[in-house]
Image 1 (spheres, rainbow, N blue to C red):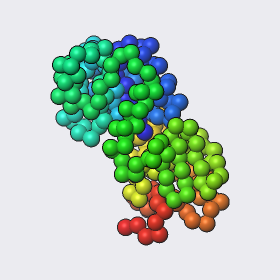
Image 2: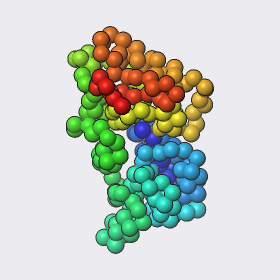
Image 3: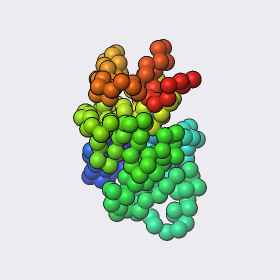
Length: 229
């Protein structure tokens, strides 16, 4: 999953980004509203975290533009403004949620997971995604299949999470690239295929039932069904 953080206080922005990366999110950071808008137009994000008071373009205006251009984007406003009218203004411009500074990063994570649950077809039970006998615990960053722990790199975890959240649906190579790698990444032509090969070895190699499928010319899918149209 990929998140855009737009926050002009560098310490806060960098702290949020570091925390989210520990939980296998790809994160891009902008320190003013104009840069945030440019990043949003150039990349694909699941969630945008927007500070209210930003140089260049304030968070309300940025929220309004993002909601217009990216209607499915999850938007959370981060602000020190806690009056009811301020919260209403933020929600009226298109924000999905609102969190008042100072806040606990654990609470922010809960808000992010809540928005992600609305966006994807496969809903986690608690914080655990399931496909057949494969589980992915989003809190502990642990994957298991058939009671066996699967050790994954951060990127493999991110790809598996994306596939599992889209259970039974084909996810294209372009979608995987857009959701998993941040703006600083240098991608080579076979990066997705290479990672998918490694993921298959981890998830499917030792099990008779294969969960990960290649849909030639389209992308990849994870499913526990024998017949998926």
